[in-house]
Length: 243
Image (cartoon, rainbow, N blue to C red; front, side, top):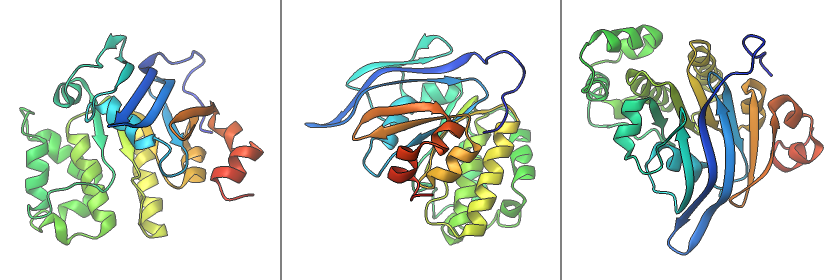
């Protein structure tokens, strides 16, 4: 587990309390509560269908929770629409990237920056993603899967988030590109951005995280320092493919 910064515990930036999410009669998340310390990397671990994406969707405002509270810097944002949460500093990198495939890389970035008053932000983000600079004029749909994921992350960073929610950023990518995605994640974290990560490669996610939360069929089964979860036999056998 990466060392915490400084001797004092960081303040909580996001609190999820008693979260319930339903899709019609199907209850996807039931009474989930956890804290996200500012500047930390927190990962949600669990099998497919455990409710990880539903938690991120509720925190980002893409879906309305059936019950429970989401606090951001101590303010109840449970009823805020997604765009207000983005403006406040909570940004989601969704599963499947959801870039605008027919638009160019540059147009995707311009749309992401439409509420920002200076183009300097976009240029600063390009400096962190040099591969995108070379592909500015290409339709985003022609990029490789890894490049599309880089674009999705870069587009989110244009919003200058304080908290970035990442849903399966390494899904379907070649090992070399997975390494690059995790390098980007750690670079973002090093700049002080808080990260909540959902990732199918649970072992890799726990290795870079401060804290992990294990979800099982919509409920929070276990929480703790990521390093401890990596050494927990039950977690290893259930989610990490054995030792």
